[in-house]
Length: 288
Image 1: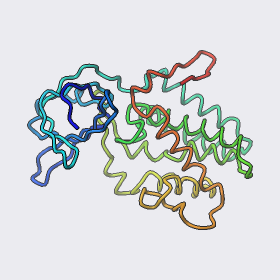
Image 2: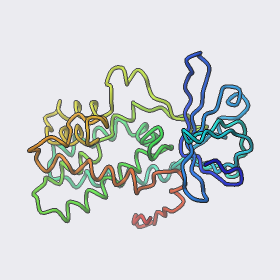
Image 3: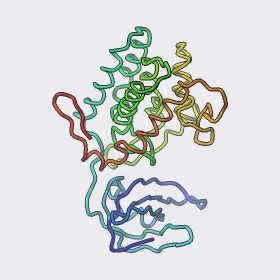
């Protein structure tokens, strides 16, 4: 329900086109009063009046004028005021911190071939990896979102590995945790001033999904189990998984990346404002 007295956090914003060829903005916001979610539409006239910075994910806004459609729980947003401007995401020091922590994990691999393979990928793609978001809308959709999401997945995987009774190859699980979303460095493009995230349509045309890219990358070097974990990490075919975890008789290792990825996507630093709760200590013990 639209509440003109409430403050809202912008969760995501994207721009598309109507059937008539005009611009249309889609914004999802969350009430700070009751955490209810509201989907908003902004027509081209409104988009032309506001700056790109105003629609940044994480901004705290107050709606000035809008019309609410109760049937579809959405509103036509005409004007709003930015009360608090969010950061764009991780700063350079934070980006380097999470990258270095991931590299440290790889350097501990006992499998030298796998170690060199992953380190080479990280090194060659470091510049993109440091700034790429983990998603356009769903989670970690800010500068550096992918690097912190990857770190979180690795940390969750380490906890799971310490608890499970099934025998799993630790190096392979950590490598899959690091590489499960590596294709996103090509799939997404982010404006470093506004924070607006768009798909790289050329990549989507050539590769379809980031999962296919990561799967192919690992298969080409003979890392079959890692490729299979990447192929199944979305869980279900209708969620984009190349291997549906609903199939019977899959080996246990197929499931682990899906679950630790989901934990990060739901309980990690999913919004840019979650970064305010993270403190990086000098001894590299991160606390949330």
